Length: 129
Image 1 (cartoon, one colour):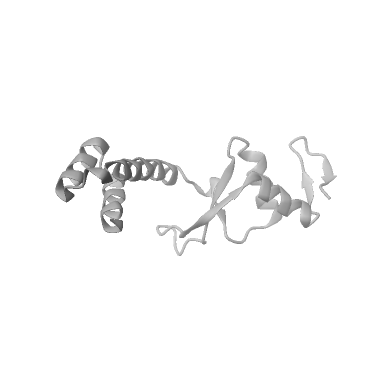
Image 2: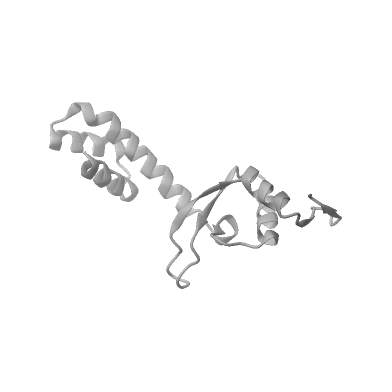
């Protein structure tokens, strides 16, 4: 089952025919009960591909960042509820590995816990702690 779902996720990220792909995989395994799981895997792989394709450095945080970078991310991307966290890239062509996600709320809590001085959009300094 895990191998089938892994193959479906891999193919789902590469191909554009999710419904047909799910039916083909279901027919190959002769297990109609697995169709909902295959469809879910294919849908999630499509969403993951779209999210990671649009992920640029200004929308991604590294595993270790300064408070200034965290504050800039919060100020710049007010539409994001969470940020992907990656390891630093090995080179310009090889992106860092995905580690997880961090929410806006957790970033704000980290900044408050460390009592960092934050500069708001208008340029006035104020203390967050």
